Image (cartoon, rainbow, N blue to C red; front, side):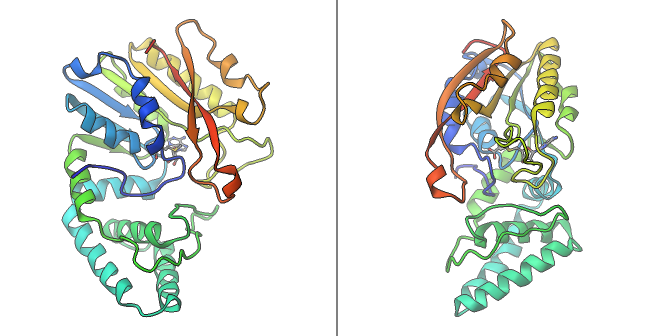
Length: 298
Ligand SMILES: C[S@@+](CC[C@H](N)C(=O)[O-])C[C@H]1O[C@@H](n2cnc3c(N)ncnc32)[C@H](O)[C@@H]1O
């Protein structure tokens, strides 16, 4: 069974994988003791793909600032059987409910319990997966008080317990160290053996936005500039990196923010086609371009 994201997450890069693959350095498959680092892991679409594509990865390090997410990775890695058993019980109860009204009440009750956060890490992760599968559009979104606030999704038989994926993910996560904090924590893993895939939150389109889809402070111009300094630090340590971001030229063809920021001679910018997957407004789900920026030529 294929390892793949166990959660649906805003900014998931599943559909960008062919473009990422084409933008990788050509010699990764032949590298002995390759180290893979993802400082903004999200749901790990690229992570799971990469680890299966390159079994020569000896060790991987992932990080995300979101504690619910980092805990979920740890539970999947260390206690897959307990997680499957807990989810199976929740799924049996959910499938046994007769009406949409009953399912909605069950969902709201579980959401309230999750938001109390007064649970074991195992139970919190089970509820996170349950809410992700049963909420509207399958999203993770919390408000500024860290309360999950996505409404009920009206699906009658969503797959709540997916043992094959959990076991495949757990197996592959055995060589992954899971960190929970700011992305700069991963700098200490930079070396000539390491390859970094960097997928930060998008630079907001509107200048007035102050929170992003993850209800964290936006990753605005200052944060993007600081991230460039982090990338310079990686280059100085001899490691290769690939960074993705949304192209601001989608909205404003005159916006040269990233072209100016990454104008160094040894940095390359590619523009690739992508599809916006998560957008409440269907009209805005059309084709856009994504930037792939690297410190090597692919
Ligand atoms: C665009 S998403 C990554 C998507 C991911 N590549 C995927 O395929 O799902 C960005 C992630 O960065 C995390 N994040 C935001 N600020 C951060 C920071 N300062 N340090 C580390 N992670 C951060 C968010 O929690 C979010 O999961």
